[in-house]
Image (cartoon, rainbow, N blue to C red; front, side, top):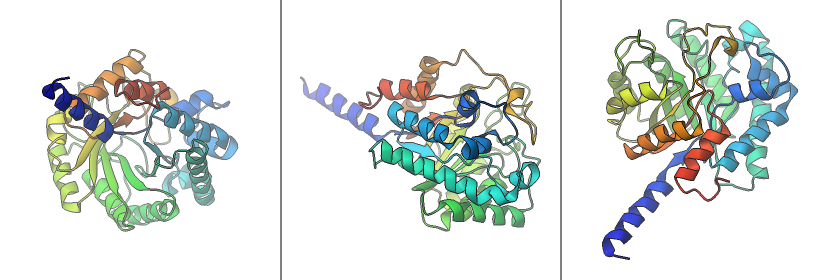
Length: 315
């Protein structure tokens, strides 16, 4: 082997070893595996009624090659529970989700797997005009952080629709001293505003500057089409820290309204594991450190990425 080949191989090994591979979607997979029609809080129903489904799905993502699994608490926010169920379920839902994540890591005998806390939009996904007053949002994010902090290795403030929302969530997460990643969702339909803008219409450049000021550890884009992520990439890669993406496989999210269910959304069946992995590998080639999947991205999609990276645990 020539010296040049050795250098190339060493770079390739470093490239593969430096990648942080996230898990994929939880809610959509649970809809498929749960034995009841989806509701506004479908994943919470599974947490209480069939928690083993959650643990099994975590294990499948770990077996597929994921380095990070995220708590199944996306819809377990104080506001949503008060609106659609019972606020008294907040603690039990978080304890059950944490137990399933911890058990999955233990059963897979892989202590290097990291568990991410989940700080989602408090009211609804994709609806930047539906938000709580800042003081109320701060109290709710503080509740979520307190419930998750002891069990998690890092926090992901995900599907952030506006800069203000991201700032409140990130500040609350940073208060406990663990790594914080902030992931924005961007406009992704042809009729939407300029590509590279948040669902709020704010520019991604401005959002990245705000996250830089807060000294968050990572900035990502999630729950947007891979094509919109590609278009936003020149702005995303200006972040001086960890950055990456985990897209969805929905045709359009406009139909999902506050309190609605995923039955309103249509899956892009052409975005199979092979094709999604091609997007993820391109993000990695373009400088990403973190890739994974969001809604409609399955263990098979994560496995396809891991296999393309030569991960030995992607069986």
